[in-house]
Amino acid sequence: MANTTDFYASLRAELQQIRDAGLFKVERKIVTPQSSFISTDNGATVINLCANNYLGLSSHRGVEEAAQAAVATRGFGLSSVRFICGTQDLHKDLEARLSRFLGTEDTILYGSAFDANGGLFEVLLGAEDAVLSDELNHASIIDGIRLCKAKRYRYKHNDLDDLREQLRQADAAGARHKLVFTDGVFSMDGTIARLDEIRAVCDEFGALLGFDDSHATGFVGKTGRGTHEYRGVFGKVDIITGTLGKALGGASGGFTSAKSEVVALLRQRSRPYLFSNSVAPAIVGATLKVLDLLEADTTLRDNLEENTRIFRAGLAARGFDLKPGMHPIIPVMVYDAELSQRLSQRLLELGVYVIGFFYPVVPKGQARIRVQVSAQHTQSQLTTALDAFGKAGREVGVVS
Ligand SMILES: *Cc1c(COP(=O)(O)O)cnc(C)c1O
Image (cartoon, rainbow, N blue to C red):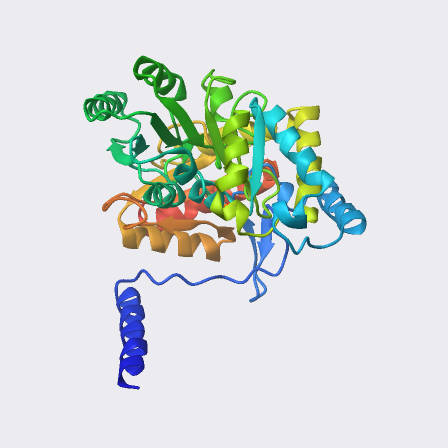
């Protein structure tokens, strides 16, 4: 008994350390659908600027109806993995539609993008191979790479010279195959990977190029295909991973999209695919509807682009220090952790829901409010939110 008592005591001590460091995460209860405004369980209704609901599809009527129709015709759940009895016609339809949308040969669905990345590298790379990863890549990429036996190289964030240097080292070490992998968009800064230049470097070294486009699929690029479209390398990348849990409706689910032999081997060997349940019919049916909407016209991503432009300009005009860019992730730099918390708290009182991020989520001294704009925000919501930013910013002393 002594041992288990010690165990639980050590967990309590660890939790207390997290609290003492001011890093304890608490979850706010929302009692409405995810939308441009939300209500919390204390009755407050606030403008929502912190969801990944980029296109406003999380509570879109047509998408909800498509989900309901899929439940009516295909049921609630599959109670099976894909290869036993968990593949419906809709799953195959969605895989084909995603391939067309992304400009690839084939696509395999996963329960999440985390799983897609978790089940990718181990299947494709062996001990003779090398994987080269941007130092700021998403946790799921880091974990996926940890599970594979390939030699790992980490290159400096978005740094082509360092990427070249790491590729040289991989070659010097005799790597058989080399895979460069990056986030398409980096979530804390809204930075868009320089995929065109990375592609050129990969070609120089005979390396494969893969990227995780979770913060881009559906809206980055002229027709919303993603970072490869934005950077002019549509059809010229090897592997794309992504999520259905952000712009594409925001429920859950992920995918890997690539050449057909890559996807075929993943279906045989990828552990999160083989040993985890099929994506629910409601999500699959709804995502097909999302792709109908996005392929019909570019209204939603155009609205998002316009809202982003308005919000970035409005914040800059009020004296805020922004990380430059065009992505709807807008980092409002506050630098000081405590100040970022005071600003987000005051904004909440003024009816605007945003989150302040500080170390260790971002580097020390780089605390910020991360604003995320949606196509669903109305002009009046944006104006109200901008005015609240101005007022709160002056009160806490972030702007004068
Ligand atoms: C959000 C995100 C994920 C995780 O997506 P899920 O489908 O929720 O697992 C993976 N990679 C990146 C880059 C992300 O931004």
